[in-house]
Length: 239
Ligand code: PEP
Image (cartoon, rainbow, N blue to C red; front, side):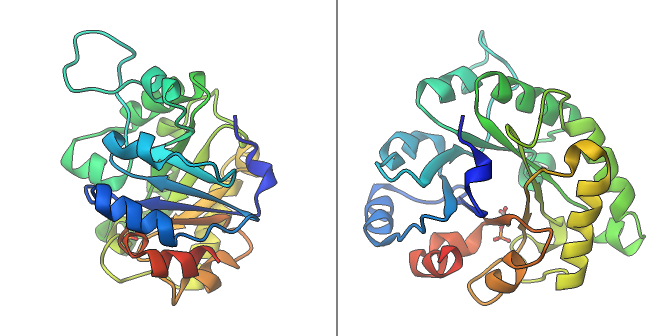
């Protein structure tokens, strides 16, 4: 398993349902990975094999994994299949999966458990909606998501947490820097066992705000959606 402690920051590109072979070729020709950081590209699973290169600081991640280990589940991709293909990371519980595919905290927990068993690092995504934020429910929602989505076998060495306020994803809106830092501190302090977890921030990160976000004391990197599709923009973020 990758030693997360070797990296000062972690940057994850979430390409969502975007990309094709020519996109990928051009992207890789221009991508400049920084050796202090761990950079992970989460493409659609069908392209993951083509993404694997020789750069020791560049990793591939899946965007989802099956709840099931094997059997009659047409269209699914299991954690052991990802391992078989040397995939080291996998997003779980992204708000788009929670929203459009009815993924529950319990599903996220099972998927994370299956991934950890296969030595794949789950990137467990949590975050509140705008309505929850406006009703001062952020802490309560995050606490419930953490309690119900993170399996007991998870540790700071085999799992990552991504704080992604749902209202900040793809909207151009972000919490203030103080808010981001406070929420990350809160997550790390929910329980003693989370103190050393790496917690990434996601939600409208771009080259113009990534530096100040990444420099926050309790932020250990970023999960980037839209801006990660532009390689020059992503290069600036990870530089
Ligand atoms: C995401 O999809 O995880 C995300 C953070 O998207 P964006 O950067 O586009 O807000």
